[in-house]
Amino acid sequence: MKYRILFATAAFVAALSAARAEPVLHHVHGLAFTPDGRTLVVPAHIGLALYRDGRWTKAPGPEHDFMGFSMTKRAIYSSGHPALHSPLKNPLGLVKSTDGGKSWQQLGLSGESDFHLMAASFGSNAVYVFNGEPNSRLRQSGLHVTQDDGKTWKDAAASGLSGQITSLAAHPATASTVAVGTSAGLHLSRDSGASFKRLGVPAVVTAVTFDFDGKHLYFATDAADTLQRAALDGAASTGLSLPALDRDFVLYVAQNPTNNGELAIATRRRDVYVSHDAGKTWQQVARNGDDAGLAPGRRPPSQRQPAGK
Image 1 (tube, one colour):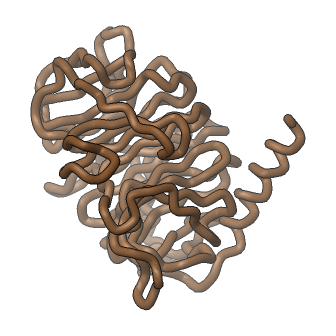
Image 2: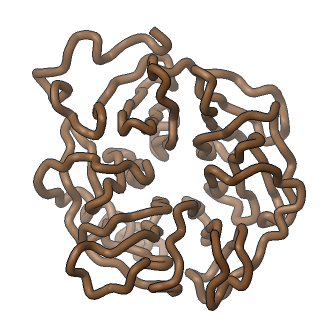
Image 3: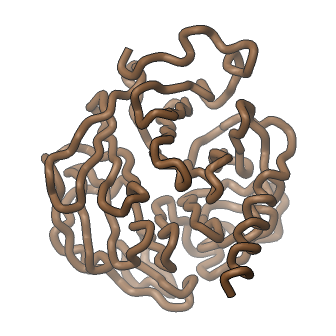
């Protein structure tokens, strides 16, 4: 079984690497590194955009408008809207790909739900979604979790959660641990969303992801010029400097699963940055959704800059 799992993971990564023509990030609806850590993936309104070895390419597969994009060790989970001329119902409901986005399996709620907020655990089988309106399977709006690819769902009471939900993150190993960013701060649950405890001071949290060490969270707010790293035990958070965002803010944060010192951020204006030294310096790899002026050989000297400068 171990060898079959390793083979499936390798095939999944290889499929993502079979890229097509250079894309433009019309939208940025998520951010993640592939399980082998070699490629940064962005759902970009018309399919998946890939950044690897200094250049952007387009992944094979349908050009769906993916929402709620979440990468795990052996699959991609998402939602959103089907590509133009696709026979699939709109919205997609919950979908899953095990071949790097070449094909997608419909797991349910097709034609009913578009989950803009979704988080799948990298190593466990938990998938959390925020459902804005009731449907045939999720009888009430709010936070829900499935551990069997949508066959069954559990409502999360979300006691202690305050504010409007802005972002979700699932623990990389523990299915029952989930983080939620809201307009009132960062919240953590260790009981599958039944109850939450707020971490730190109230603030509008715009992005959150778990550190792969399983003991910390990275999060950003709409006002701070730092990326925060908070301990799950409630200890004081530490700040990592961000590049000058000029009234922009971070929408997505990703950490490389094979190199925890490599981080990536994507902003509201579709700027994408990568740090290879845990946030000390940042390299801009997309500006306003494009790499014009940033491609190898054309990047301005100021493109790689000390954080916060």
